[in-house]
Length: 219
Image (cartoon, rainbow, N blue to C red):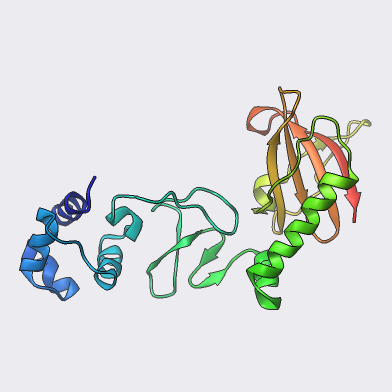
């Protein structure tokens, strides 16, 4: 959909006249009319007001020209899981699980934000990627190219040890750097995770079924 159609649809869903919408965002009725005919589009400041009023992202108002990806965890994001600033405006750089009310929510991201921001985090990622690619030598594991910040709650699998005991190695309340990779032999996927203390590699079937621990190595 084009911006003109999106604004018209959002306005009519809220049962607002052009004049009522104009009053709420401090423009004239004629300006709203020009948007809805496609003659012009709102400027960035007005788009922010429309975004907050209609509870949709600026990206949505513009017809979704960009595929939004969380810069923290790498997850695709849309209006349902976008983060917000303290004033309620959407932040289109992060998902709501990584950033909320103007603050990072994941401990590993916050730690690096405090000591140097994204640059320091990227340096640490590069070091871990190097270790995965040079130290482990696991058959079928493709070259690791990238790591995302992941919540322990979503990747903390339960493994069955040779003696039948079931164990988990991660903490649901912590965050890790990791990724999922398809095995070069097909069939199963590799899951990798790491922090300052260890590297972990496992395999599993579709939807995380039947996980098996491959290696847990102290750094």
